[in-house]
View 1 (cartoon, one colour):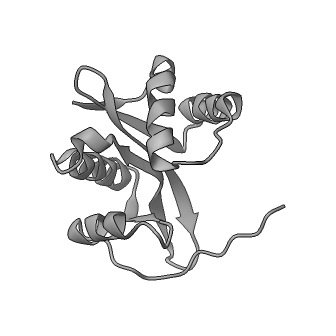
View 2: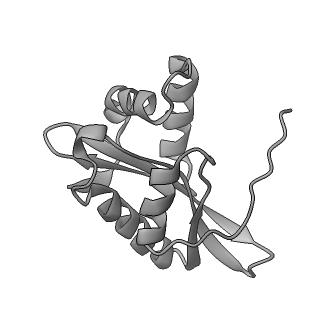
Length: 140
């Protein structure tokens, strides 16, 4: 079942973050703050995939994009528990985000992904995404 995330989902989602970013020291309180802020920001949509527990999570923001002359849905996070990969859960999350984006007047769904995540890239391409750009980032 895919549903809108709730505040009480955070602890289980936090455990999924460890799978997404192995070896990274995660700041629990900062991620909690971001999660809670996202729940109350109208342009942010958080979804949880629930079996008996939360086994998938995603977040999307709605952006106005001048270059594309359109609104776009931008996936900021997409995680499926390692034990549940290959069972269609990621596809269900993406399809749900596509519907939400369309309902919000978006013409595209976009995301970025680290160079080292080859399996994720294959997954995205199988689900209709195309490689189109480089992401540039600068620390402030």
